[in-house]
Length: 383
Image 1: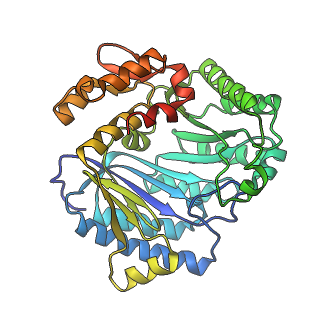
Image 2: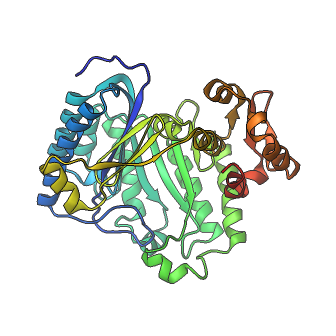
């Protein structure tokens, strides 16, 4: 481990692009691969980790790690071990760091989950999506609802005390009744955190050909599902802290809050993105080139953009407004040496007149309920 000379703590995002098979709605950088390809990737990824630590010497202290994908739980225990050895060798990882791994039912075993605990992984994010088998089949998921529930109980048995379950609404063949059933079943399991998203039909996915013209559920039903989510989750003590994220007290995801609060994060692995200071970097997204560049000791990341002061202010607002507590006037002023009103006075007045923004108190500005519904429209006004 290296000694910590840097005051600001950084988050690490590590991309594992492998899946058993691609889901119908997924537009993430992910694909299936054989054991040999996975082995090679982990080996090269470790080389990238070592080089990144030298290239960005200002990153020393890491207070959050998020291993996402794809399906990171597809890696063997040995491969996950190797990855963590590399991380500990190159970075100073805070003893209180939040370390999350995404895991899909059908790829996790009790042995794997126990090993995660030994490696210091203290937060598990399980991709459940739905607890109705017909809906899971429509999505192209590899698991059935019973397996999702089993995976959750296995995670508890392995010792996990911080579990997130991912949920999806607006799925083909989903009804209000079937969604409500899933919500109640999920809440009765009592995870610490729930991410609840509405299905987005992305270009380039199999769903796009089917549903681009006519989404699987009407806008009206989608809206009702969204209201139902808030209602039922609130009944079970989940506090909504971001547009799509709910947590029991003290369990908001620290790593994701970094994104929404403009913190620094370093992305490692195929196609990963980073933001350090006012610079955004993007990693090589072609697997053959990624492996080749690392092998030949060539740079695998490039500067995607250097954020101007204007960009940073807009981002501060747009990302900050995703959080229910909204944007802090004091923090804005401390960071940019001007007041919120000086920069965005007219925009804020206009949005307040339209009942899309509100003052939570003297310091915080946040979206109203109506503003959350049309958040993208509001965000555009800060660009």
